[in-house]
Image (cartoon, rainbow, N blue to C red):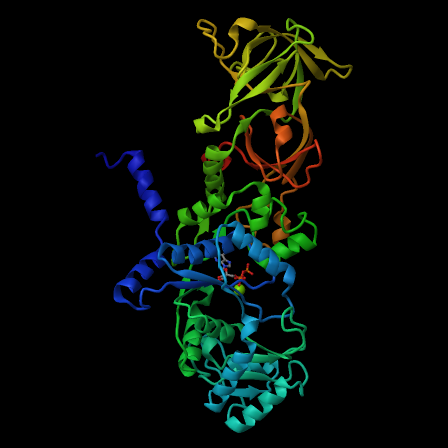
Length: 570
Ligand code: ATP
Ligand code: MG
């Protein structure tokens, strides 16, 4: 075989893209019997925002790997920060994980369920002389911590006896001290080269109402302490998290070792970064709160609910996750890859229909008044089982404004005065006359049709260079169509090097609303969430703003990879 053929090259690229070192790790663990062939993962979102496509990568990895190896996955809400968390987010996260096609069965957990146990374990650390109550204020604490190049100093409170520490800690829990006045810290090593290990805080005082535990607690455990213990209590085997937690792994191990608890293995992977978008929940929240978009599920958002509303399918997102693979080093994935995944799926499953977004009326002068007929149209040439449908042909039609030019350049093969074009599934027509209004706007074309050229007839000897789509005027469904472009104008909106904020890069033309699109009548049956290919235009999905006989469609994606074109031009 010729190794330089593009086919081979393509498959090599695919292979490389799909590499997933977690898969290899699990295979290795199963070989050595490290976990007794168990694979038990968890997806641990913090309920402080909606899930985004980056979370989808983590969901597909955690649930996907467990599924592949006959294991199980827990859904665990990491709800240790009562101030930012909300039940609205809990519900939305569950909906999104289910929609992606994953099932945690009866394994729904909340870190807050472990507050009692965590408190006991903190007491145990104190008794072992491995934790102490510290009263340095945050500023002093920072000062004592040292820097990357300089060791820290011991807190003056570090040498309290376990008895004294325990006594104060119990009083902290009982609400005897004001917020922020004391913290519990692990007693590790203030000169540790890894700053994370310099006596990290494990409990703080915070009188905040928790969405599950109410006002039971006024002290809350920190993430690093909670996370490893939650993993341990749930018997997790592979604790997968993103690279920014690499420095925290020694602490993860330290807590579990000191407390002599069952010890899952934390492994870090590179988070998903996508160009032309932002993915931090803080920034997504800002987009919503400041009205740059219409909510978390705005179809321009990289949130899972936004993508769903836009017309993405769970299959396409799962394929995307598989396609990009899992690696140990950061990279930026092109948005075009996500679009490739949805196009690839919709190409197979979405029925094709005709829709005219910018209608121009066409009258067929030689077609009898009051006559109409049904013509057979193929629903999806990629899949014969999707069958055919009947589309009505009448004397008055709409075609796309763009498909006509009064003064066409040489290579324009669509309709122009005197030229002929085929109407998809119908006849060849010729443009005889252009009708304009008082402002000189073209409002109508008068055309002749040729009955003998009916689609499917033997029409040898009659060739036209172009086929265009159309809709019968009499039977058209009026629709609103929302055309989306990227929300940001630059590849990396997170780049603040010139004193800019990511909101400075917002694309002012990211949403264009077409109010008077005309659709073929089969679309009266379209339901919210249904997906179609509008022939020659792209993939579109019915939005929940649709009312009665006036559907609203979101453009999911164009037919061709416009990104590829952009980079070719560049
Ligand atoms: P953000 O930075 O957007 O606020 P987060 O990491 O704080 O996200 P969590 O709710 O803690 O959000 O995330 C839950 C899980 O999803 C974590 O295991 C986290 O590592 C993973 N995750 C978050 N963002 C990404 C991403 N971009 N790519 C892959 N995994 C991610
Ligand atoms: Mg987090």
